[in-house]
Length: 78
Image (cartoon, rainbow, N blue to C red):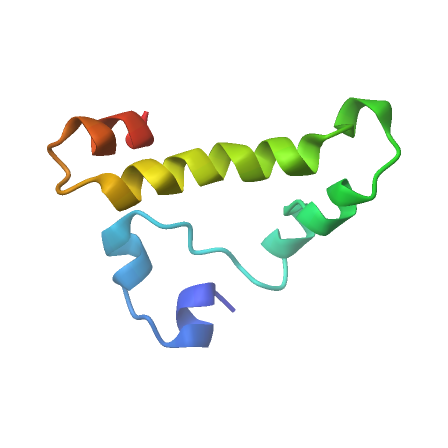
């Protein structure tokens, strides 16, 4: 079952360019961010915070943006 089917979104995810994953199969490949928070693997040290900081910066830019044509939106998109 696709996410769009589960939530009754028809083709809304497709229109927005969103990933319409298969819940029963694709979800096994998603990263559980909460596990990164407590991981003791050296390569993942501070990864939880770095990921949150990364997306927080994008959200800040998008919140300040007035349209898809302005510099803030373009920077967030990049």
